[in-house]
Image (cartoon, rainbow, N blue to C red; front, side, top):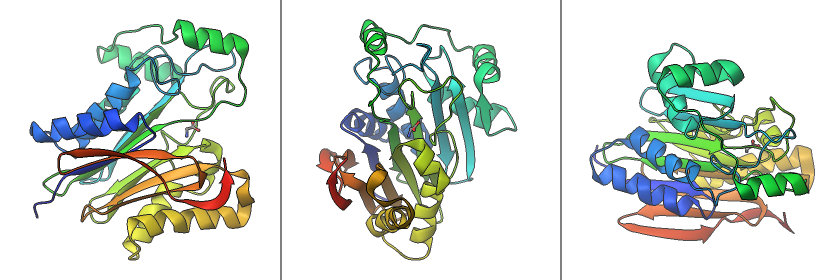
Amino acid sequence: MARIPVAVATWRFGKEAVEDAARVLRGGGNALDAVEAGIRVVEADPNVDTVGLGGAPNSEGVVELDAALMDGATCRAGAVAALRDILHPISVARKVMEETSHVLLAGEGALRFALEQGFRRQDLTTEKSRRKWREWKQARCHDTIGLVVLDGDGNLAAGCSTSGWAYKLPGRVGDSPIVGAGLYADNEVGAAAATGRGEDIMRYCSCFLVVEYMRQGLPPQEACLAVLRRIYEREGGKVQLCLIALDKEGRYGTAGMKKGFPYAVHLEGRSLLLEAPYLVETRG
Ligand code: GLY
C-alpha cells in the first residue's frame, strides 16, 4: 500500500540526515538507500564529533567506528564494529549485508573487507578531535546518528553510525552495530533506533523491544516510553538514552530517559527539529 514517506533521526545533526534521506526517496531510492545516504552525510561532517570523520577517538587516540543498517522488508542486516580508517562505516555495513553471509564484521577483519570492497583508507582524526583527545574530556557523550525511514512503498529501514564512547578502551563495541540493541526494522510493524550509552541500551535489547511493543499495539511514542520505563525500573535515573520509532503507518515517536534530546523529522516536504519528550524530570 502506498505510504507518505517519513524520516526520523536523532540529534540536531539528524536534520542533515533526514533531509538527505528525503532527497534520495524523491529520486526513487528506497528506505534502505535513504538510511544509508542520510547517515553518510553525518559521517562525512567533521563538525559532528561523535560520528565518522572527526569522531572522538579511543583511549589510544584511534577512531574506531560502529555502524549498522537493517532492511525491514527482509529483516536482513549488516554491521561493522571497531572499524578503523574508513569514512563511511554505514556503507561497509551495507556491503556486509549484501556481499557476505554474515551480519557483523569487527576490527581488523572489517577493515580488510572494506579495503577489498574498494573503500579508501584515511585518517579520521581532525585537528579538533586530536586536541580534544589530548585534553581528554572524559565526560563526553555518545551521540549516535540513528535514522529510521519509511518509503512510499511501505518499506522500513533503520541505521546508525557512531564513534562510540569517547576515549573508550580499544575494541569496545557499543549498541550501534548490534541488531535489536541500537536498531531494528520489520516491515510488518515498524523501526527503531537508539542513542545514548551503548552498554545500557544493549543490555535491554532496546530497539527490538520498542518494535515488539509496537507489535503489541502501542503507538511509537508509547512504545519508546514503555522501554524506558522497563530500564528505569532496574537502573533508576542514572541511565541516559533516547529512542526513536516509526511504525508502518508512518506514525513516529521518540522519548528520552531525561531531558536534552533533540531529534529531526522529515515529513511531507518539511524538516522539523524538535525536543524529545522524556521520562524522568532531571536534565541528563
Ligand atoms: N550509542 C553509541 C555507543 O554507546 O557507542
